[in-house]
Length: 419
View 1 (cartoon, rainbow, N blue to C red):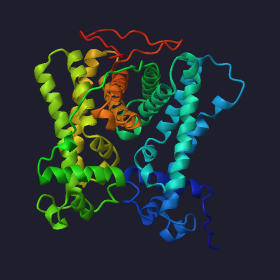
View 2 (tube, one colour):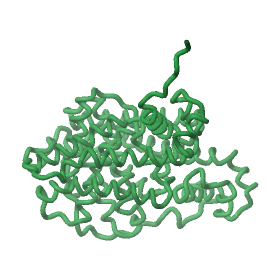
View 3 (cartoon, helix red, strand yellow):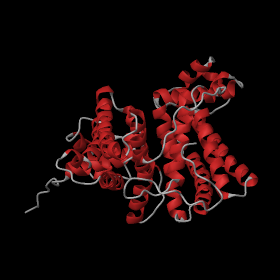
View 4 (cartoon, one colour):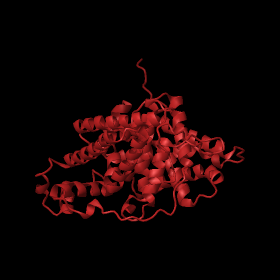
């Protein structure tokens, strides 16, 4: 008598995890129902018995991550809560860190792919993230009662950015060490002093000056990739924005992927050059790191579209281009990490790499929140981003009462988080 094959009881969970990992690795548009079915070990036809299509699986994967973040912090709203504010803060952050680490392979979905949710689903995700931010702000209100609402939201978002940055890279560290490191960095960010009343400055935007058709193509393509997404932008769209026929694009680029690769390679080369130039001009590690922070933020504000697209659309690079870009990025992160260990010797190189990635993530996430577009007007957004990146990289560890200890000056640099 032949045995009867029964469907595993956890098939639904298997499909959900396979879909989340597939979308996290390759992006929404690059994944097919066949890809997900293969990961699960079933046919595409069998997969359709569980889901109406790819979008449903994508939606469920993204919103499931939001639900996990909500669920792990639900205790904040369950009275009675007898914890001291600093203890409650650490408990909230630890719960979020554990959730982020458990979903590291797919955790970037809500950060990088949320734009592909339809309107109602995107609103639902935003509501999930707002509720998590509000819970972070519960102890923050008690620890820092003088904060205005925009400051609270910026700080809670920055803490989430630090935690979520583990999905942006593959740097390795033992789980207990990584957990403690992220907790210290996120708690320190929550204690950063965001400057007020920053003077206004005038900055000439690069968009105001045309440097020829080649540069126009790069610039307009980034704007469109940022607004619509890479897959929703065609060569014809880019040509129309530049004011030339589509055939003219091919005088400079072999196709859309070539435009993306050229933009990313240029950005990586410039950041790498900043490191080389700074190290050649500045022998003091603290001063060198301070200059690099300023240069990195300046480049992000000069080209906000690139800062966003670089983190959201890298997944669409051809493999050869992605390999080159990753090698440049690793060398850049390594240089930053070496400087950071010189300034903050409590960090090992492995820890410093993760802290550097967190600092980069804060610039992109908080730059978008406070408004990169303000670079040509009020300088306060730039000052806030600089403060938060500095806090992530160099800020002192948190004391039990929620007051940051003064960082030790080990390399002749004074860290002033109000600057």
